[in-house]
Length: 364
Image (cartoon, rainbow, N blue to C red):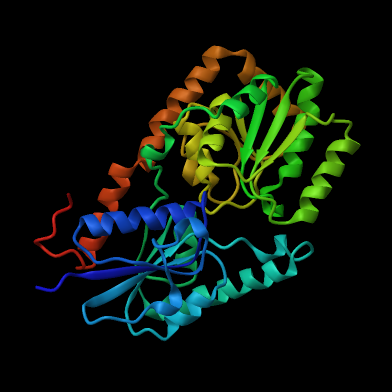
């Protein structure tokens, strides 16, 4: 009997990217289940050479009963898939509203518009549409996809068993207490609001500092943030723009920080939220888009950006060990929903539901 084939398609693969991590993990699961499974992408970073194939190399094979399409932005690969006569499992990672980029990056705004049009066009070929959050599934339902479901982003515990990066840890120890945010430096993440929050927090705790970890995708936005910090009188060391960091460096920031704070106004899932929960870092987050679905009843969410009140709240968390402990305990319970064993069982159930997992294929 010929082996079952189920390939994945994504716009690009990038180190430190939540979608890329999910694609690689699903490939491992599929291969463990006995599938032949490759990953095809339009853009492949050097770190993934030999592990991911260029989309142009793909040719449909005789034993394929479907394919998996990860969609998060306008892409050539979505256009390619329109001509392939195979039913698709769509995994939707959300598309940031283009208006966030209209003024700073019109090219990106057009790509996001294109992505939304491609999403609607994929409906007729989609066997099952999965959101990686309940928020994303609701958007799929509104667009007329059926049936739908949720396959959450996975937190792969094997990637978090690394020692501290000594140089990063030493720098963090010099700047306490430390607020942390992890995410691309783009307008929807609203890092400028974190700078405003730090300004208010320093009135209570003058030594407080902020670290922003993430790639500067819109350089003019980063420059404006720096000007804002300067205009507020924050000294050179008050805000650190760490840029893109290694996995070990990122974990060190999580472990050395005192509070994780998010002011982001658009999240399709928010993987740093669950990373913070897993690593014992209290989370305070603006309750926008997918954030409530990801956090559940864990952490602390707020619905209005009252900077002075938030500064007082964070100061209380920093001073009250009992409160901090209760927050961390509830977060630890919540993050279990996103660990590999549970999400893998959800994936196996999806394959069985679609008839793609044969009776002889063991879940492992």
